[in-house]
Length: 293
Image 1 (cartoon, rainbow, N blue to C red):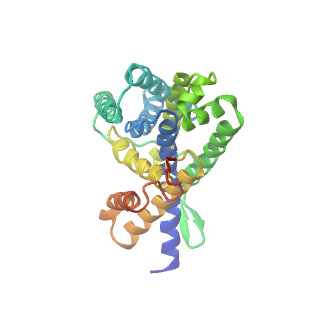
Image 2 (image 1 turned 90 degrees about the horizontal axis):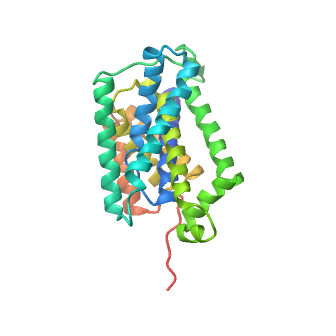
């Protein structure tokens, strides 16, 4: 096995892992603010790609206008999801929440199938398809877009949670929702903000990955599960831990597909997930929970 091939697999894995990281951060933001594992997160990714397609082909918008249109439309779906499915619940159990998010995922996917059909759709690359040589490997310009956009979103995410009032309020809710409410933080508003942020991030992930993988009504299922794997590896952190988890997952998946067989590509993610849950349930970078007696 030549080093050039290893480099090629690694570069491809980093760009794929960046997508998993964005999706994983969306999972973590909602989980930390609400305690909900939103299994409909992958559908936000799917909607991001399909709404971009609608802007380009149906509304005849340029790409620079289709992107904000897609993010806005997906965010509206996220707001409706929180208002109609999550907010009306009174003292729900974790099982109820899981069932509701899975049910909403199926509903969104079904509606997307009715509106956009079962066909797979292609979206134009942001800046051409001429490969860029790096060492002995090549990388498409869209991979560069994925990595750059991911870094920008991580920086914005860091600034928001550590340097804004609402971001600090969301962090307070993640530590102790009852205490946050007692000091005057509107917990329900923070829950709504968490869905707005996670749906917008899911849309961005769907937009930047669609030119490489194309998009369809059912692409969110596997992407969502792999984003969940990245979040588990990172200990359900909305910070750099989940990013590293996504990159690790993407690189291992790419190396496994290249060195072993592409047929095992999806299985590798779930094998890693099972190993993490068995060996270190709090994630590679999470701290074990302790209870004072």
